[in-house]
Length: 68
Image 1 (cartoon, rainbow, N blue to C red):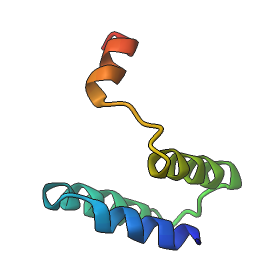
Image 2 (image 1 turned 90 degrees about the vertical axis):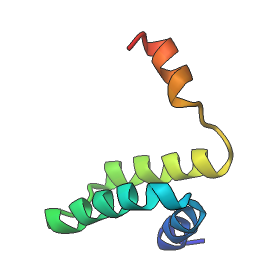
Image 3 (image 1 turned 120 degrees about the horizontal axis):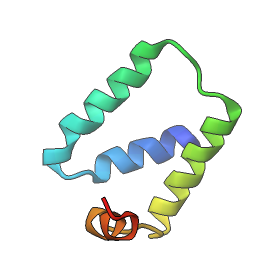
């Protein structure tokens, strides 16, 4: 599966109330005009793999571990 297909799959799985967040983020990426560096692209791909494979934690757990 290509990165584009992965992004489409993730967007399709988003709950309706999160779509505006995704739209804002994607619009910012589109408007930046700058291409992602190979390192950033690899980090994004790794993150997408983690999400797809269930290697995530809740925001609440993240905050507990980071003491925010």
